[in-house]
Image 1 (cartoon, rainbow, N blue to C red):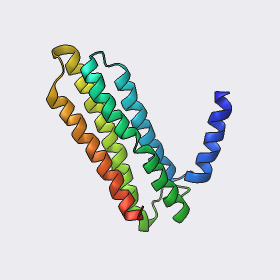
Image 2 (cartoon, rainbow, N blue to C red):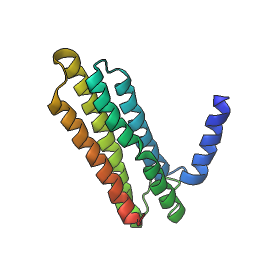
Image 3 (cartoon, rainbow, N blue to C red):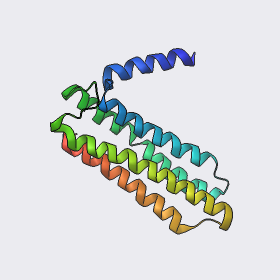
Image 4 (spheres, rainbow, N blue to C red):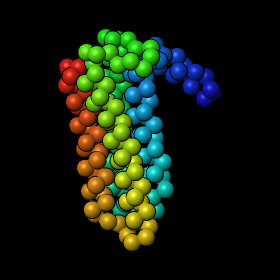
Length: 149
């Protein structure tokens, strides 16, 4: 059953996101979110887990917004290749930066998890995770502002 669901999602993504830059930037964000959740699953300390889970929920709330921005961009300026439509370069830049920032947030969460396993929960490490997550949200908001969403 999961195979058919995956195929339906693939067709839906093709229709809504195309096969170009908007699909890629959405996929990069989704993979970063998946990576963050994988790191969260390995947290043994309850306090650390709770803090990282709160950030995970905030980041997960951004995925539909990223998808909406990508769908809007694809419908306005369809992309089938690697060329970014000139008038939406700021949107692509903001969404791409959001994906990179999300990867950095996942990396920071992994480092916080390692620190917690060795020396206990470090508030500076958790603050770094929160700060990086805020940057992700700012990048998404920047893309939405350019699109007028």
